Structure formats: C-alpha cells, structure tokens
Amino acid sequence: MKNKKRSLLAALALGASFGFAEQLDVEKDELKFGFIKLTDCAPIVIAKEKGFFADEGLQVSVIAQPNWKTLLDNVINGELDGAHMLSGQPIAATIGFGTKAHIITAFTMDLNGNGITVSNSIWEQMQENDEALDTEKPAHPITADALVPVVEEKLEEGEKLQMGMVFPVSTHNYELRYWLAASGIHPGMYTETDKGGRTDAQVELSVTPPPMMPAVLEAGNIQGYCVGEPWNQQAVAKGIGVPVTTNYDVWKNNPEKVFGVAAKWAEENPNTHLAVVKALIRAGKWLDETDSSGALINRQEAARILSRPDYVGADFDVIKNSMTGFFYFQKTDKRPMPDFNVFYKYHCTYPWYSDGIWFLTQMRRWGQVTEPKPASWYHEIAKEVYKPDIYLAAAEMLLEEGNIDKEDIPWGTDGYKEPTSDFIDGITYDGRDPIGYLNSHEIGNKDTIGSVALN
Image (cartoon, rainbow, N blue to C red; front, side, top):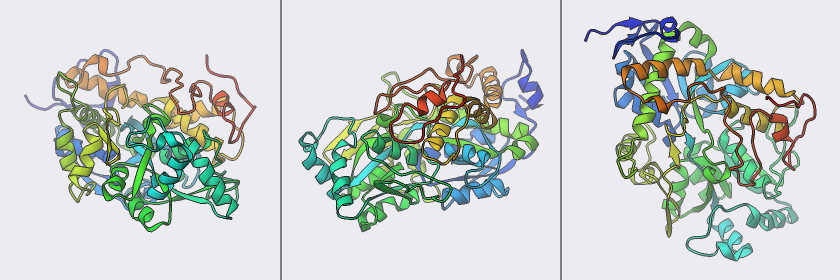
C-alpha cells in the first residue's frame, strides 16, 4: 500500500477516517532524543530499535546525557528535539523553578521503577532497632520507623545521615522525602535562600547522578539513596547495600518519567510530535506484552538491548531482574514484582493532569514553590504542561491502524484519576483537591487560600 501523508488537523478531526499504515506529513524527520542511563528510558530505545519510529517516517538518534540538568538545557536550546525526563522537570521549568522554559509532555513513559537503598551498616542498625527486619525475607512494606533511632543518634553526635537523590525536582527526591516524613523524619525545606532544601533537615539529601550512586555509597559519602534501576540491584549485586523499599510501596503505580519537548518545538512540529507519540505508545505496548499466563514476553530482549554500552550500559543480569518482573532486596530475598516497571497497562502512558498536580503539591510542600497558591493555580499549570489532546489524537490513529485496542486508552476522561490512598502512610490523594492533600501531612508547608476543590 502506498504511504499517504496526513496532517495533525485531520488527525484531530472528529469522525475522521484513516487508512492503515499511513504516515503523517512530518515537518522534521531527523530527530535527536536524550536520555539518562536508567532502564525506564526503554520506550525511546525500543521505539528506535523495534522500528516504531521508522514506521512513522522518523530517523531518530538516541543520545545519553550526563545529568538531568544538561538534558533539560539541551532540549531548551534545541540541541535535542525531546527527551526522557523526570516528571517534575517540565512542570518546574514551566513555573520557573530552576531554569525557566515552557516544556510540555503528551506522553508518560512509565509507572514505578525506583527503590530506596541503604548501606549495609545502616541496614544492620535498622535490624537492631526492629527485630522483625532481622530475617532473610522481612515483611514489606518497610517504613522508615527503624531509621528514626539512627537519625537521632547521629544528630546527638552532631552529624546528619546523608542520602542521595538524582535531582531537586525528581520523583526520587519527593519519594525519599515522603518515605522519611511518613515516619516523622524531617527531610528539610527549600527556601528563597536555601536552594539545597536542607533547612530544618534531620537527614541531608544531596544530588548524585544515577550511575554514580553505588560508587558513592560504597565510598561512604552517602549512607543511602533513592534511584531508578538498575542502580538498586547493582548495590545488591556488589554486596554494598540493601534496598529497603520500592516506590511501588511508597505510592502504588506512581508516574515516573515523561517524554518532554519544548512548547515552541511542539508548535513548530505538530505532525512530528504526533508521530513520535504514536511510536512511543507502540513501544510501551510492546514492553508490556504478556503471554496467556501473564508472563512478560519481550522484557528479556528489552533488557539485552538496554544493557548495550550506548544505552544503559549495565550488566544484562542486573538489568533483567526488575525488567522481567523480579526484584532482589537482598541476595536471599528475591521477590516477584511484575509491576516494578509498567510501560503500558493501567492507562499509564496517558498524560494525567492529576499526576502533574501531585508534583506541584510536593514542590509546594517542601518549599520549592515559595508562596501559597490557590487550588486553581495547580489545575492551570497542569493543563499548561500535560497535553492529552495530542496523546488522544495519536491513539485515535493507532486504533484506526489496528495497532492498539480501544480499551487500552481512557477515552472521555477529564484527566483526573480517582482518589487513591495507596501510599505508605495511607493518606488519600485527590488531584481535584490539591490544597486538601497538601494540608493532610504533618511535615511541610500548609496553605489555606483558594482551597475549593473541583467538583
């Protein structure tokens, strides 16, 4: 069949009828995408390696970046057309925390995927404080309760426990803070003058690039960290640390990374953007495909591809653990975790407004947003950043082409997930009521202005 070209306008038109395997009339067909060496860059890598980008008429180079700041800067300056981003990055840039730039996302790359690891010595002290942890397979979830005496002892000695996270607006930062605060440990506040977020801190958090986490832990510069895979499993493999929890237990099925582009780039390249989202949706589906027994059938191949030095560059045997649905907490504690990485199911690729609002509540909770904001502000910012109309246009085309099933997509949603209490502290999050959620926590900022929730 001869390829036909079509426009974004046509794709968005209600009731439009499309032929199969038609390509968009893209404005730019040679693209460069950035990523950080983490397994959740998989949708971009798989879209390239399995030919999904090529099916859309795109030639894509996938280029590793040294850190999250450089990655964002390169998207802003046009060196990159788009990138694997922390969910907080497009939001923070748009509101001007750090670098000011309007960044948008029309695609969420994955759910879950992170862990919190502590050094062997800290784990031994936690076991001493809670004998239930002193077993080869302790019950999960593990809270930070057993860490409280360790923190207090260090404070009495004039020291603070040092823990690493990957970036100030990373999920990892907020998850580590959430885990600590849920047990009454203050992780520190950001202020106008304290950009490191250490004001009132009982534990000091610092930025460490993901691939360096195990080495910095082994050197003793930090005593724990929150990071994505494969760097928690690497600590187990090297015998230098113990993952005490995953972010699945901190917040079940939490959003992790997004595919971000500059708003100006999206305006100038609407068909190209749509084609990219189509390819990424297909990659997510491929990554989550299962057989009749529910076993993930493509993850071994994905782990092999990701292990290449031009991608994640970690040992295949380390990467395949979490990617194939298992996770080692200790060498004696291997557990099935089929949802450790989710790339497609649970409507995870849809850009939910409520996901963006959660990140905004954390920015305000910890002082990165320095002044109180009305509830309306949270909803407005989420809609500036998250672009479900582009996602749904891409999904409509894929449905017409027979590449996805209708039930794969949350058609007709208002962009807000239902309230959930699947957090380690049991507190309910409702994206329609950001102020109410913000005020439900004991540690962190609380607001009273403009607190009316959406109906």
